Image (cartoon, rainbow, N blue to C red; front, side, top):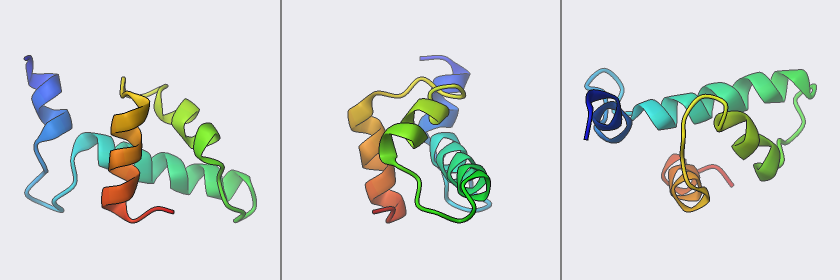
Length: 70
């Protein structure tokens, strides 16, 4: 396990978010702005998140669940 993998798992002390959670929230926010405030389909969000971090579909859904995204 390298340092990057650890950063993806361990929450940051500043806000309690992991790197992956922070990326998901940032991408969600940016995509909602692009779509004029409309909901973002999960598949679209997952595809865009994959541009930043390698995450399985199951792990992605776990992140969404932890963040309360429905």
